[in-house]
Length: 139
Image 1 (cartoon, one colour):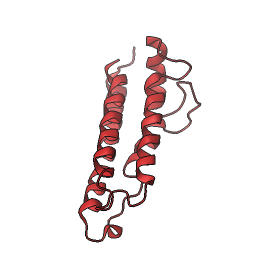
Image 2 (cartoon, helix red, strand yellow; image 1 turned 45 degrees about the vertical axis):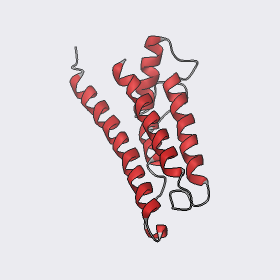
Image 3 (tube, one colour; image 1 turned 90 degrees about the vertical axis):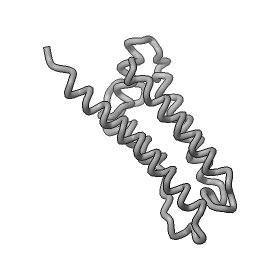
């Protein structure tokens, strides 16, 4: 029987890197929010785009465990625990949180002194994403 240790190591490292990407995006948002000239601090997708790309991975077929990313693993665990309808609840929730985070970034002057609410809101979304992403690790 093959060892699960190598697969578990890859999964945990992908999860940790995803959390890092979100926190790096928050750091960029914070730096922009205190900068005299926020245009010199690149924001990009504030970690949201990078996280969702890592989560979904390559070769994904919606609602299946196919593909190379944490989405597929979550679908596999959803099948085992009966939480797929047809998509695992965690995957559906993460996509909704991603959309919420991207929407927060789309407001004018996001992550600047002119929009002081964007940083705390983005932080809350990122923390909820990390919490949701932890669920398949525990299953």
